[in-house]
Amino acid sequence: MTSARTQPTQPDRTTHPTLAIVGVTGAVGQEFLRVLDQRSFPMGGLKLLASARSAGKTAEFRGKTLTIEELTEDSFAGVDIALFSAGGSISKKYAQAAIDAGAVVVDNSSAFRMTDGVPLVVPEVNADAITAANIGLGEGQVPGVIANPNCSTIIMLLAVTPIHRAVGVKRLVVSTYQAASGAGAAAMAELEQQTREVLEGRQPTCDIFPQQYAFNLFSHNSPVQPNGYNQEELKMVHETHKIWGEQGDNKTGITATCIRVPVMRAHAESINLTLDKPLSEDEAHKLLADAPGVSLIDDRENNRFPTPLDASHVDDVFVGRIRHDLSQPEGYGLDLFVCGDQVRKGAALNAVQIAELLVK
Ligand SMILES: NC(=O)c1ccc[n+]([C@@H]2O[C@H](COP(=O)([O-])OP(=O)(O)OC[C@H]3O[C@@H](n4cnc5c(N)ncnc54)[C@H](OP(=O)(O)O)[C@@H]3O)[C@@H](O)[C@H]2O)c1
Image 1 (spheres, helix red, strand yellow):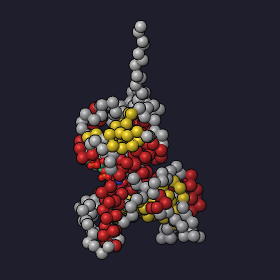
Image 2 (cartoon, protein in one colour; image 1 turned 120 degrees about the horizontal axis):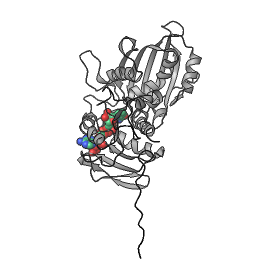
Image 3 (cartoon, rainbow, N blue to C red; image 1 turned 120 degrees about the vertical axis):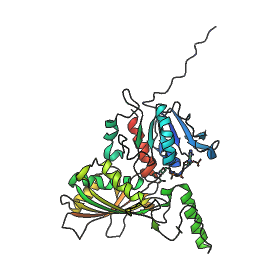
Image 4 (cartoon, protein in one colour; image 1 turned 135 degrees about the vertical axis):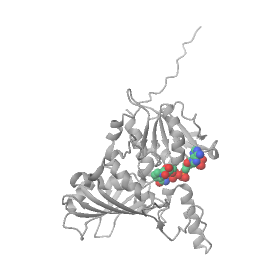
């Protein structure tokens, strides 16, 4: 007697791609697992990758225990979408191996953001950049890198792009108040440890940041350039121009000051705009209330505006303090205060939204 053996069918990569998470043990990597699960991302398989230090550890996903493997150049066989969040040097070293294996890389690091031909994407703002680059999993599309912008840039652009599209932003001045988690899992642990040490009257341990973080704030820890701006500030400037498709003399004037504050999670930003055409406060409210990925907390009567705690673990970016800038002609200047979860919308969620655009 013979029995017909059915061959296991391969999942269709365009509807159920196999994913890899590079840097799964990190702050963003862990958020990837939550976001993929919460959004019921359709997948044929999931590979968890990190350094040799984490090889053999396990992580739970959709009721299954998965073993973390060491990232090597051979890690990407059968992978369709590789979500990278292990820092720029790892992306530079391994993204090509993923592409050579046929995968689309969605990269959270700054390694390729400003590279010509690499789409830099906030799905609510410029999803069409992926189509233009013809990167994807479908027939006729090619593997490649899609870059996730800097977290502070993403959060700012969710709030400012609807206004820019409606009336034009001539000049943008942003000051950030950035959380510990933006610097990874180790920075969060250091803030917690320092807080305990200071409260107990002990000397705070400064391993990640050179200065005391608990009960303090300081200029962003990224390297300061000869022009006095740190790298985080310049990312906000240059990435915004790329995402808005601005070139040459037609670029919006943008300046940024980035500060680390002793908040565990979610960045805040104070934004001042000079507009090409006048916009009333009511019109600004309506634009932002209708904007995808934006929620308003703007209650003047009760002095209730967005906080990092409101934004923590939430998809939307919160906007409030929407008011005319008194120093500019009526209607031409606008102030906003914005809070967004930079591990989530600033990193993992934005990257998963990009991955969703690749799935049929
Ligand atoms: N945190 C944020 O809010 C945020 C926002 C936007 C973008 N990003 C970017 O996302 C990336 C990750 O940030 P994070 O905050 O999640 O950092 P993190 O918490 O420090 O995690 C780093 C991850 O990289 C892995 N890794 C380090 N060296 C490796 C190696 N040689 N091979 C393979 N994996 C290695 C680590 O694995 P082990 O545990 O095995 O060492 C860990 O999983 C960075 O590029 C960061 O700029 C972060």
